[in-house]
Image (cartoon, rainbow, N blue to C red):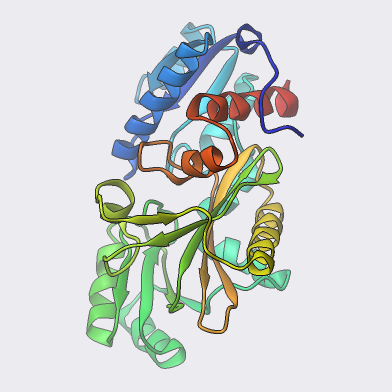
Length: 313
């Protein structure tokens, strides 16, 4: 399948760009949605924006919506609930379906699926008490990463080096999610790899002076480094791309997605997570990878929208 859309912009009908929402990633989603909406409108698509709030069901029934472009990050938009609502309303939408969206949003269950297929992902445990923190420290050692199981954009994440810090990080992450995940830290370079219409885009190597690639490094900092080409030898880059394709296929992603991967000192790759509605801001990684593949932002947005036609009519 070609990365480019060959459809006439008018063929998409009236497109609602869904953004904002109520998740912890609302601020990022507002920026992503504004960029997508501008790109669609400038391409000649009959698009309008909806900041998804308490009146969304009313707007869903009162507005004429032929198709939805989902740019809602996090819970309420990326977790299968919006996808299910749109399915019930008979409105085609962009990106992954209900099951893949719900699965990818749950980092713990994603890891279980990968492990069942023999795909590499860091050793982990779940935290629900201080006793769990002590047990995880004994089992996994330090340093460790603590993260809410159902959040994105590195929200609630922390790197810890002792039990006291682990307990504090667990309590902080619990403010965002009742289920908290802790995993072994892979010491080495980080890569992010995007999928678009069944094809793997050029991997991006990430570098930051921060402790890790946190929210600030992702969206605010100007000292984050992005390497395209990613700097890997050809055989290792091919291995990374093949692993990403398998990881996304295991989850069942569709249309577009982005996987985050670490590499250890021995050259082994380790899967961290898959995002089914990645960021589309001026700092975002999927537009960066698309440019390396020859697509500007408008072409990328049209390609994502075109996939919704081919997948859902």
